[in-house]
Length: 226
Image (cartoon, rainbow, N blue to C red; front, side):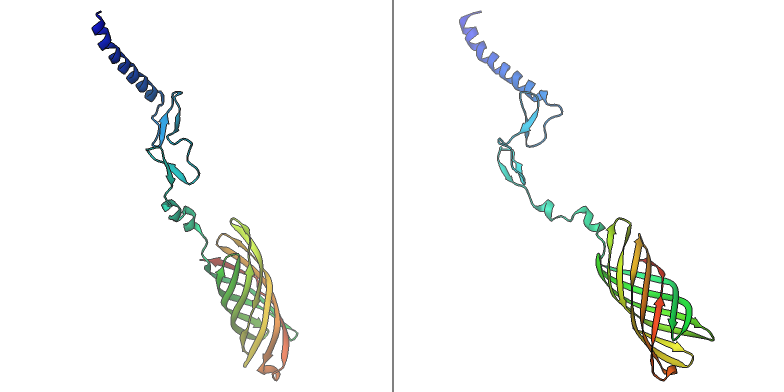
């Protein structure tokens, strides 16, 4: 080989060797590194940015870091659709036991309630009941106004409740005003609600010359939330 041929071939060999070395380095990472990373001589993907970008930044193709777009943080999280509504409706039905003026009676009760809140909730509701005293039937209508606190997690929860229960009673040719309330507790399992309020108050009836008489009431109910 002549000196001129050697002089021409040496650069070609250097270029081919450099190309082969680069190709072997690129092929060392399989699969290929994702955007923002390069294949090192050891065959591992390393960040194009050196030193690596900090938290909240991303590496650009030119090796610079920039603040990541905030569009992802503005998007609603997947759990937002699973958040519990702050206003819930429930329908209840159950037994009603009452004692007043040395007389006792049993009956049934239906109530509709609106809960405003989650762990701590205001209770707004209406109720209708019928009591079967000896010799006559006494319908009653009234309100459930109060507060309840709920504790626990998952499907099973419960807590205390306190209610004001103003009512009107009818029957036996008389009308009565009942001013009272109840305290008790409740248990929720998924959509089902068990309430056990124990109440008391005073009733004023036209059948007893307008006198006030004490009342004791127990009204366990089973409800469903919807």
